[in-house]
Image 1 (tube, rainbow, N blue to C red):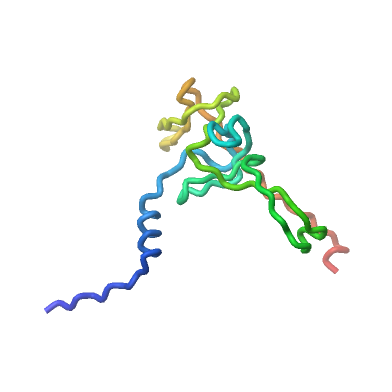
Image 2: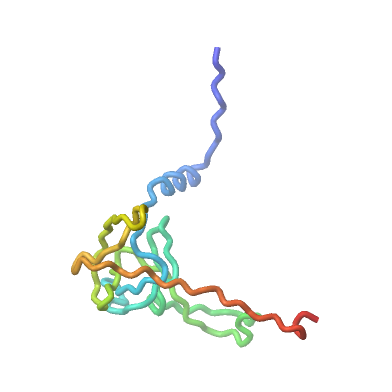
Length: 149
């Protein structure tokens, strides 16, 4: 007779998270893209995407959805006080800007380049390819002999 394997006891929170992870869609807006807010309190503002959370379908846009936060004095904020900080907004409330600066929906086309299949993001309004977001290169700090001592 075969013995049944014991099942792992998962909490309700763990089960819900597992379902959410399995159903996570691949978002077409990436970090570094320029987007325009199309609904909500910051409607009409544009900014650069700082972070994308695909699990919660929320994105962090520079200069949009600012919140006030009271901070105690620390090394990062020696003076303390009230600071403005961006909060994430819903993914559906923004549209990517094409190369001309107009908001558009995103389509995906596949092309063969050098024997490889490449996925290109395209603007639905014009059909032109949307340039890939520019990622900042990590800056290297030059070590001086005096700094090593």
